[in-house]
Amino acid sequence: MLPRERVWAALRFQAPDIIPLQIHRSPGGLFEHGEKLLDLMQQTPHDFGDSRSFAMPAPPPPEDWDADGRYHAFRTDEWGTAWEYRIFGVWGHRRKYPLADLAALASYQAPALPPPEGSALASELQAAQEHKRRYFLTGGGAQLFERMQSLRPFADVLIDIMEDTPEINRIADLIVENQLDYVQRALALDVDAVTFGDDYGMQDRLFFPMPVWRRFFRPRYQRLFEPVLRAGKQVFFHCCGYIPDLLPEFADLGVRAIWPQLTAFRLDDLAHRCHDLGLAVQLHPDRGDLMQRGTPEQIRAYVHRLYETFDASRAGSWLYIEIDPGFPWENVQALFAAALELRG
Image (cartoon, rainbow, N blue to C red; front, side):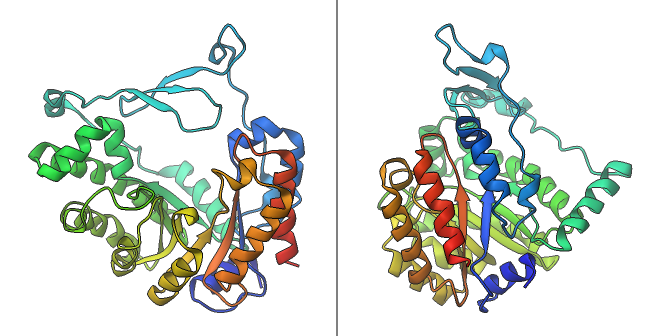
């Protein structure tokens, strides 16, 4: 099978020749481990692109280091959110919110995404078509709930949604309009799947009662997913936390593949739920504990357990590798070795 055929087989719940593999080029992991990680990644073929094209991230500029030689950077993004970063390549901490005071909403404008056109669009489209000759192509990266938390403090967002205020509805609609531009950009490149991601779960429950989620979020996802489904493309969704009640909602909305937080579930229960719903599963080994503090033997056993529990030899899942800062090198090697072992 070609790599893209392997991914399509998993999505269609047909048996691939080997378990599909996706490797994410994580800047934080590459910055920490350097060329030895880059070499390992480049030597490990995956199905979502040519791993030989992976490269080191640009190093942070001198002003991103404090007087003690520690990484400490500050940025304000295009939405007007001020961020503080303490680990290179890792999500930062929000320090200032453009809509903390709702009086600013009347004049607030989301950043515009320049439309693809001319030679730039032609070049991107040519690169996308070349990619698809062999590999599966994803695009998009749209968010709703996560972006809301960057525009307004988290507790205020939760309260406003529960109270269904006009202002929080306006903020959500403003974000949806912006994210639709990213969806259309991905569709213009003829991607195979458009990715979305929002975290709705705590360790043992959802942030919202299901009637609230259905009222506030579901119609907005319908809007975001509709052009993707109309174009005959796939919807991939990432969602952390314990979200069993959302899985049927995602499936009903047209999501084809889910990237869940595996540690929030009993693996056999998650596997059965997703199989029954026709949701393919992106299998991301535990990065919060296992990869940080486990042993190489435990990592190998865990990856093999995922393979068996999700019946990956027959369909419906693929292995996802992302190396974060803090992973001991022997654990990184063990994860790649386990993936290669399963792929023969």
